[in-house]
Image (cartoon, rainbow over all chains, first blue to last red; front, side):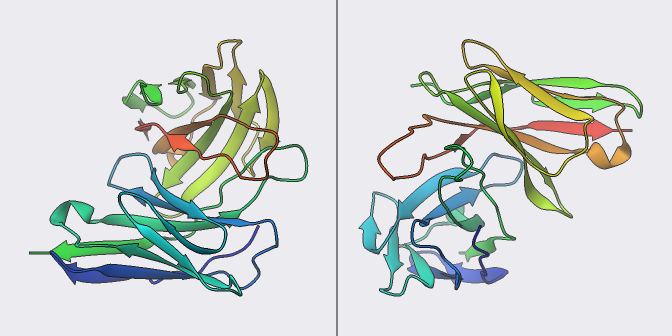
Length: 114
Length: 117
């Protein structure tokens, strides 16, 4: 499973756009990139997933360059409630039989200030 | 559609005891995975069940076990509890598509906070 590297923490202000970049230099051809959000004492919540170029949903955008060695999660106009830990994961169906094991890194603690 | 539910939400046990945690996946989801989260080790994969069979296992001792029932509900058991087992135990479910190339999305429950005294 590809190892990911993210900033440990980031601060932002309400209303700003936040971009969190994740490095995954040894990403494999079949790997997808997935981002989760986690609030204290809660389970991670799926945000977005992509393979290449750009993916957008109602809460975020995911930008993936052509070499796929990094990805950027973009959160538009953050609010105080977006303060959470954000995890970048890279992986695919494990060849041993369609099982999928998520490997979480340390994540990025995003703090949104008023 | 209801999300993943876990019971109980909080649990206090003493060393040497055993504990059973329960997880009900999202309706229609066939795969259930368990994770342990601690401040020191972060989120770590325990095991995954599909069709009542353990398909994948993380690097945890045999004191950690699980099972899945025919309705996809899952239980996790920890025997001979140690202080270091204090953690948030998370369950995640997914559809477990076996074709299409796009990985399943795993949806997490709120977790069970286990405290071992």
